[in-house]
Structure formats: C-alpha cells, structure tokens
Length: 609
Image 1 (tube, rainbow, N blue to C red):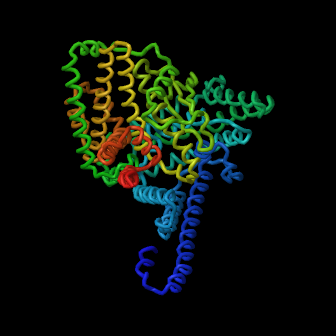
Image 2 (image 1 turned 45 degrees about the horizontal axis):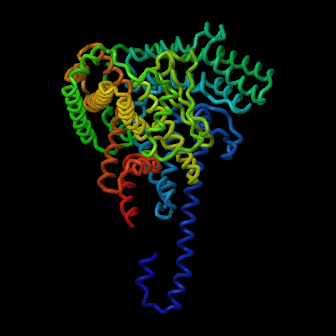
Image 3 (image 1 turned 90 degrees about the horizontal axis):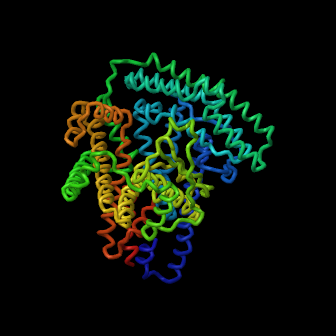
C-alpha cells in the first residue's frame, strides 16, 4: 500500500485522506481474514491429529482439556486403504485452503509456520504417491518393538490417563491387524520385506510378550504399570481399590488383547516370507530410487540434490580420514593403547556428575535454560533392558516441561567418555535441553501448538550429534585439566573415528538405496577403511537396507548445522559468537534447513540496521 500512496502525493489533500480512509481498513480486513483462516486451519489440523492418535496426544499434551480436547475416544491410527484415501483427501483439502491464504498478510510467526507447514504437507503429498514403501514393522525400529516401550513409559497423571491407557491396550489387536493388512498389500504389490527381516520380527513377537511372564506377573507392562499406579495412590489420586481394579484389568488385557495381537501378527507374517526377495536397497525395486529421493528431504530436512549430498559426504570423509591420520602420526604412543581396546577415561564420573559438568561447560556458548530445566536420570526397569537402547530421551509434553527424563539402560550403559558423550547427545546440550528450550520459548511467544505436528528428524538428530561432538572436546578439556594429555588425545581420535564411520555409513546409505550398491560393492568401500570382517560388513549392509535414511538423518543433519555455522561466521564477521549462532538455531527450529538458511540470510541486515 505505501508505494501507491506515495505516487499519489500530488493529489489534493482531501482526496488523499479519502484514499487512506477507504484503503487502509480494506487492507486490515484482508490481513485479519487471512490470519483468522490460518489460525482456524492449524487449530483444525492439531485437533484432528490429537483425536486420531491418543498415544501421540498423551506424549504431546499433559492436559488435553487446556486445549479444548475433552470429549474423545482413545484410539490408535489403524491402517486401511479407505483410511489412506481419506487421509490423502484431507491433505488435499488442507493444501487447497492454504493456497488461498496470502502468507504476506500473516504475522511474522504465522508466516514462518505457513512456510514450514506448506512445504511439509507437499512432502507428505509426494510420499503418499509411494503407497507401499513404508516399513512400520522394521526389525530394528518397528511398531512391534517401540510400542511396548512407549506404553511402559506412558505417564499417568490422572484417572483419565489410566482409563486411556487401558483403552489403548484393548485396541492393540485391531491396530496390529491393520499393520498386517498393510504388509500383505505391500507384499502383493511386490514390495515384500526379505524373509530374514520377517523372521526377526516374528522372533520379537515371541519374546516381547510371553504368556509365562504375564502369568508370573513380572512382565514389564505389569511391573511398570504397578509402579505408576502406586504413585497415583501415594498422591491421593487413586484409592487402593481402584488400583487393584486397574491392575486386574491390565493383566486381563495383556492376556486377552496384547498377547493374541502379537501371536496373530507372527502367524500372519509367515505366509509373506519369500526367500527369493533379496536383501537390497530401495533402488532395486521399481520406483524405489524415486521414493528415496522423496524420502531424503522428508527425513533429513536437507533439500540439496543427491549428487550434492554425495559430494558433501565424500569431502567430509576425506577430512575425517586426514584428521585421524594426523592425530595418530603425531601421537604414536596412543596407538598401542587404542589397539588394546582398554582405553578408558572418566570412569569415576556418575551420570549426575557428567550432566553437571556438561551444563557447566556449555554456559556462555548456549542460551541459559530455565531454572526449572532439571534433568532426571532414571534407570530403565530391569525387565525392559533387553529391548532398550543404552540411553534415550522421551520428549516432554508442550504444557509440562518440568520433568525431562533421560533413561539409562544399566545393562548396556557405556562408561567413561562413552557415557559422557551419550549424555551430551541425550541431555545437555542435546535432546533434553533443545526440547525443553523450544517448548518454553514456544509458550512464551504464543506459537501455535500445531507447529509441534511438524517433525524434523535432521534438525533434531543433527543437533544432538552436533552437541555430542562438542562433548568430545569438553571431555578432552576435562582430561587435560587433570594432566591426562594422552587420554585427551585418545578422546579426539575417538571423535574423528566416530565421525568418519557415521559419514561412511551415510554415504553407503545413498550408494545402497539410490545407486543400488550390492553387498560386495558395499564391502569393498568398507574395506578401504579397515572394515574387512565379512560378518561386520554384512551386518552394516543389512541394517542400512532395513533403515533407509537413518544414518543420513543424523549425519547430514549435523553437516547442515555445520554449514549454517560457517555461513553465520561469514555473514556476521566480528559479530559472530557461538552463543549467537546457537540462539539463532534454537529460536528458529525445529525446521528444515532450507528455511533456516533463508532465515540466516535475513539476520545480517536486521542486526546491522
């Protein structure tokens, strides 16, 4: 509007006033209309997602009623062709509604959200055209293995939570049946999982829930449920009688719903086992290469071409190799220590000691966290240990950031510097710190809760890996302060070695899924970096085949963050600091890296003006 008014400066004053009176209210009206439409649309999206998946809702909202969600039926998102078609239709409707909203008429916050939402929905639309490439029953990260852990850690805050939890157990049978339907359709479409993968899933069905453990009352879905109910009794929320009733219902459902669900899944997978299906990458299947091209940006948040990503990874692989070679040549005495496999440092530090040290060392380089942001370290229940990673963090609800928990698997917990860097990845300055910082900022700024629906694996895991590598430097500094120079060098060697392997595996991910590299070809590349054991090479290859884009999610996310940091150094010059960069990254994420690059380019004029 302003350029038009300036061009009319020679008009009589009374006419200029009339134009102002007529046009400015019209402009304001349209802006308010677009704002209102966008807010209503995103509120609808948020509500629909919460109502369609009670498990997601519970991990997103501590108190759904605060968000107007009071009347709902606990449910899990069962698959069917009809439901898939409905979801796609709903997606098209949302995109159509977004297309009539002018982003320029939105507030700065909503404009950013619009950009991210539209791009995310277009990615979903692109992926939807590849109907049978998803792997919900992956042997390494499938629903059959992850769901019980999410149920075991399902926070009980109220009687409603107890009722919802039990209702979800009742729905597991139909939920698993729908996943089996998907696998059957997927197989019929020529995208069956290799027989060995299906056998592995069947093995998990046999061991995750057994009649013996449930009959004995020592299954982890019994022991953890009992612990959580007891906490409600102690808090006066449940009576002893209500707890006994809930325990009895839980036991019944484990026998009548959960156990049969796993048994039916196992039996249903048996006819799908086809030994002629090769263990090979996506590129070996019709449309697989195109699917991988669509999957990469969706998972990593990087919109670079595959060829550019290859170049990035190849260059970094060379850098890490040279860094390792230089360290080893400069410190020949440490080679014997490392080859012995007995290098160990910081073994006297507990998890609490390490988290305190990490929080101390990150001060000045990261924005200060809320005084309420206290990490809790909780050992995984002993009966959960066989199914859990060495350590993990489950995100906090957007309306309750008071208790971020890092779970430690004491049967697999690394020690010394491994524990130090693991806790940096999961805790500070990694996942826990970033998650709570983001949610507290979102609440303070009044951001739409619908933004939590957007998932950016590359940003989240890239950030955690980025901070993990910083923690190797922290650990080296700590060891040097104790006069342990040789140990400090060993930690630096471990850092570059880990980076090299993650880079190599990410490059292999592209080679296998985009270039259709065989096991023989992958083994040849691994052999160039000293990985010559055929069993190890086969294990790496098989894992990457089953988890496309998983390594790139971490490592390309990390490289994109490093690229942003270099751009920030160039743009900001003397005004650059790690604190400023990390604040920028935290304040503008989670997001895809195209968005972050655009926002970073906008920072220089804003800072210099």
